Amino acid sequence: MQKQKAKIDTSNEVVKIRGLEKSFGDYDVLRGIDLDLYQGENLVVLGRSGTGKSVLIKLISGLLRPDAGSIEVLGNDVAAISQRELEALRIRIGFSFQNSALYDSMTVRKNLEFPLVRNRKGITKAEIDKNVESVLDAVGLSQTINQMPSELSGGQRKRIGIARTLILNPEIMMYDEPTAGLDPITCIEINDLINEVQKNYNTSSIIITHDLTCAKQTGDRVAMLLDGQFQRVGTFEEVFKTDDVRVKPFYDYNFTE
Ligand SMILES: Nc1ncnc2c1ncn2[C@@H]1O[C@H](COP(=O)(O)OP(=O)(O)OP(=O)(O)O)[C@@H](O)[C@H]1O
Image (tube, rainbow, N blue to C red):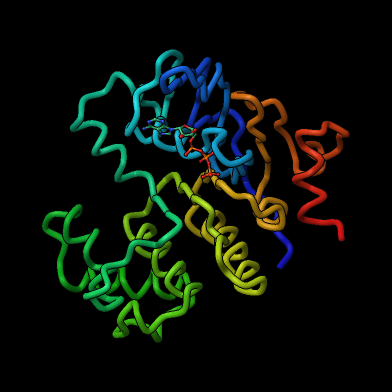
């Protein structure tokens, strides 16, 4: 499905990163990064393996501390806030990780109820049921409500994982390799779902991927991490309109025979 033009507010940075540095031993992974995620935007982050994409997500979510620079998430200085404030902030962020991490011993319904029961004290049974049905409908899997994760396909598990994050109405979504290991048709379905989530839940998203079809279909902008910095940021076409030998192979591998 063709991506519709998203409503993006470029005056509202939900993530604002300035001069961010992070090293491990002698290895300077992030060397002074500046990056904005605008409200309502899908931002794709590309980069070779080991360039620091996961480190960046961990820094944004406060799991790692920066060596230098600032990270502001939904108006909070992540490195300065207390553990309690950090936990409250994390509830406003939905994480969709590679292995979906569903609880194998629980039905789809129980998997979806879990974050609600844990994070919304005093929620009623009727509200839980309504929320579960709503997110299952949003990911197109209402019929799986009583199934076990082992009975689902990889693509379905991915969708339920996304539903489980949506149930807390996140303002920011972080997708780590959303299409990894899926067949091409399921990849397209997941890309469409990412765009539907953006539109229907009004989320701002960071999408980490090596899949340029995913980048092209979902990204309003693409940011490419090269040598520890975002050296190419723009639309998909802008980023790949270059002869840079660090960039071209990405495109050629994905799109040329
Ligand atoms: N806690 C840590 N301690 C030491 N080194 C680390 C730590 N976390 C990450 N690194 C190193 O930082 C570098 C970047 O890792 P990261 O996982 O962010 O890469 P990536 O871009 O996400 O790669 P991939 O595309 O393969 O997932 C790697 O060299 C990794 O070994």
